[in-house]
Picture 1 (cartoon, helix red, strand yellow):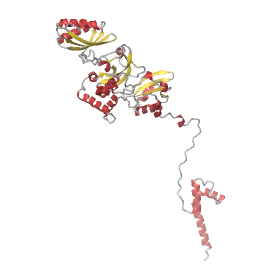
Picture 2 (spheres, one colour):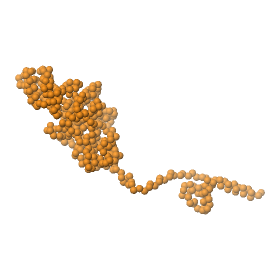
Picture 3 (cartoon, one colour):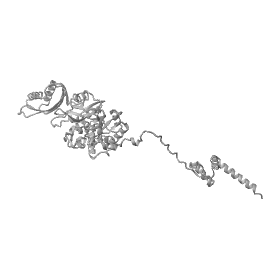
Picture 4 (cartoon, one colour):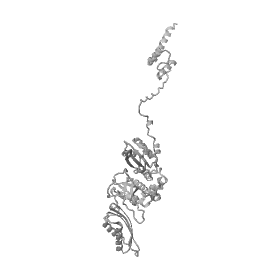
Length: 468
């Protein structure tokens, strides 16, 4: 049998099969045939290497894993790398500030702002505020540089869940705007937030005790259905009843002692102006009133100015000042007065001045229907037009009381007499009418031409002479 035709037919079939298989790679095959049995010029590419392997080892087509393309090389630039220009970590910023940021006793004028961190970038300032919030920093000094202004800083600090008592004192200098932020981390603030959120897990044992006492007050004593001004007065009176003014004359300047917070009011019954302010802010916040703390100065008994803290509160759409510290007389014989209760800025300016740069809402300048003196909701608080009217009122009250002790709180708008001779003469007249000697205890103060009088009168032994 002639096998040549069969052999030729087989060869033709094989060539046809190979040709069909290689058609997708015809250009590479041609290149390979031209260059001999050497690796193809493109063998470094994954596809070419796979074809070379396939041609050498038969018909089994391997699976080729093609890697993702490499990232493009960045174009050369003169801009420094982010690592070279990165703002120092906020932790380092806090560590470099040479003050105790948790003590809460920094004064604006006592800070060297050349040693405080400076910011001209909003993102960096936000990071700084975030760290202050996380680390529960009480105060932080900083220097704002162009283009940042104090309004920018106030907008950025408001991004965080601080409370209303976050405040700033600032002043412009050639180097920028010097600012001292005081953040809302007092015990009163934390207690009010826990009360609102129903979560006491973040409170200290002392703060939990205060929360329990305040909650009991709101359950049993707070006049829930009364007008707002009466509700606010109940907060004021509750603090006055609990507290005696006390200060340590700087012995605890290095830390936030209890007497500077609501803890002193509720647990010890002793507080300075900061403690009164923190307690009022706590209770007012728990009651739902917009309220904040105010820092500045007040006139001392000697006539000078000294550091002081008080509150501002919103009532029926207007803001007023409240100074519970100065309203609390700490005198068992005399009723506490309400001189600094919903008081306007024009009256309080005689004895108080807000720290320069302290950002607070506009306070109503004049007293109005939310002032308790002369308000029908407060019949115990008399308001008279002049000394003659005041004299007639006091005589009438004495006659009504007869031989019994009586007390009065009065405000006189146009008092133009000397208070001690005025009261001595009145005491003599009352004793003559009652036909017995009387004893008068009083405290008074003036705001411009306005007299505020807290007075108690009681009969004495008939054998004693009349007088104070």
